[in-house]
Image (tube, rainbow, N blue to C red; front, side, top):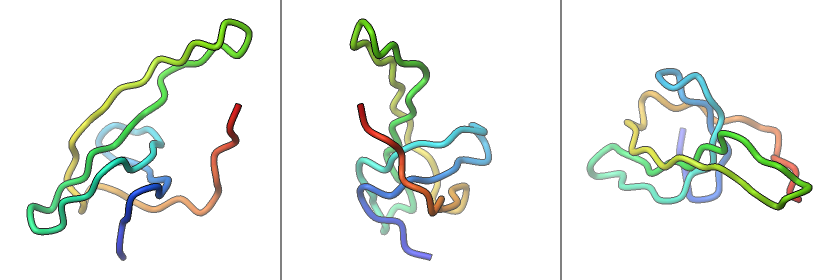
Length: 67
């Protein structure tokens, strides 16, 4: 399984779904952006960036809806 920038993934350790921002295959890590909450009326989005191991991640087939 190859994970590339823009993929939607599920993290087993975080138990959350996020979007891949950057992948470093030689180090076995990926930078993942998790959306913690969003308020469409006020156009606010709270995100969290985490560096996780590639073997902890599982690809999700469905695409996330944009605002």
